[in-house]
Image (cartoon, rainbow, N blue to C red; front, side, top):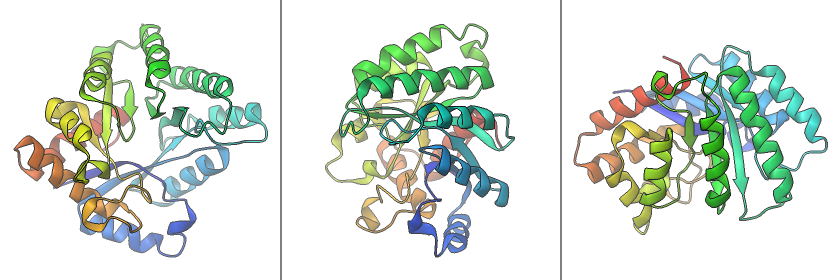
Amino acid sequence: MMLVDTHCHLYLPEFAADLEDVLTRAHQNHVNIVVVAGIDAQTSLQCIKLAEKYEEVYAAVGIHPNSEVLDTKKELNAIRSWLSHPKIIAVGEIGLDYHRASVPIVEQRERFVRQLEFADEANLPIIVHNRNAIHDLHPLVAEWVRDKNRIPQEAKVAYGVFHSFSEDREWARELTQLGFLLGISGVVTFPNAHKTKEVVRSTPLTRLLLETDAPYLCPQPCRGKRNEPAHLNYIAQEMAALLGVSTDRVAEITSQNAKSLFGIG
């Protein structure tokens, strides 16, 4: 069995003391590929350095909608300059976040659209952050997809992933039909996560990815603790139970999805 953690933040201070042990436990729990996602230029550079150091680690670079940066233009130029790096496999984590909105919404939209252009230029998928913003995000990504005539949808498994998907089954259907995958995090293991469980039941396995979002969103069996890639198996097990298939089957298909989306493995 092989698992791919398609979204985590191993550069954060929570992992500074034991990163080697974290990656060892990931291997012991069949997590053989890990994608680390940046939230600004500094953390994106940290992602690149981790990817250069560890064979199993790949990097996504981008500016999070609520990352407060001193010089947005300078940060965006840095992100753009790195996109030819062989271990950068996506532009992300990018999107809109209206929950906190510490960055003005107008600026969030501007940086998101600019980074969509970067992804198009580099022919990379996107990792989308959405918090209470789907009604504004959807038309932006829909327009971006329509403009990607030089990259036919049938040539790729998807244009990107909506990370830690939190919308309902109707939005799940809309986004997967548009050409996106859905990232399923530890939230699906929570007893009261009825909406996320229904999304998993109603979405083809070929449109789903596994992610931890470590150190956040630890699955139910270890809830309240620091999350890490090794915990991905709890998410796979819950998805298997919801779909009535084996955990091996969930691992196989979601890993294929990740490899095809990111062009790895």
